[in-house]
Amino acid sequence: MENHLQVQQQQQQLKLPPGFRFHPTDVEIITAYLVPKVLKKPFDTRAVGEVDLNKHEPWELPEMANMGEKEWYFFSQKDRKYPPGIRTNKATTVGYWKATGKDKEIFHPPTMSLIGMKKILVFYKGRAPKGEKTNWIMHEYRLESGKQPTPNLPTDITNAATINASSKEDYVVCRIFHKSTGLKKVVMSSYAMPMPMVAERQLGFQESITLPPLMDYNASSPLAPPLSLHASSL
Image 1 (cartoon, helix red, strand yellow):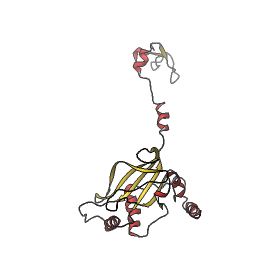
Image 2 (cartoon, rainbow, N blue to C red):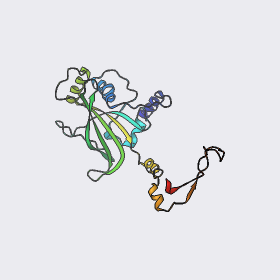
Image 3 (cartoon, rainbow, N blue to C red):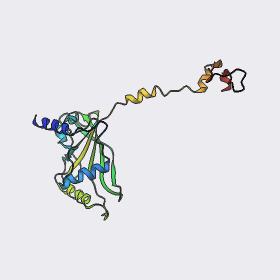
Image 4 (cartoon, rainbow, N blue to C red):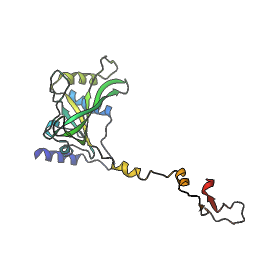
């Protein structure tokens, strides 16, 4: 109850003017939030909360977030199944998070050096491998460094990647959101079905189509448009 009240107080303090949204880029998530978090340096913590993803279902997370209407950001620690490896346990009471697709590399723009990875996960209800897929999606951001040292890369990024890899406090940033069902696409497609001219001719639309004049002309004027067009002449 106390934690819920603290979240409500934080949300009241974080009210932004209409139209403003917290939507950082992949690079900003790594450099402006994850790096200082690992290095324990001061940074603006108002937008990104911290949560144990194994103890909460995805639909509980929006109320626990510091801000956000359609997507919510959290720091979380990896719960490793095998200490030497990279496999992690993301099971909750109701279901589990399952990785999908290939991890995306995140590069530092000025140096084009590898600084992080983004993993996409989908939440399933039940237990693997027979879980029921839901529309809850997670983008997990982690620090990553290239195999070769990069002299031009900021030292904070390099140090954070080294510390995070060797520490038990292996922090990641998670973006949580609920994927829409695609209803908008279905509705729009019903208005995007123009009938081709070939179909019109096959249906026998050979009748004269009378078009009203765009302007009032004198019938004897050479500028007067024709009063009718035939479909066969189109």
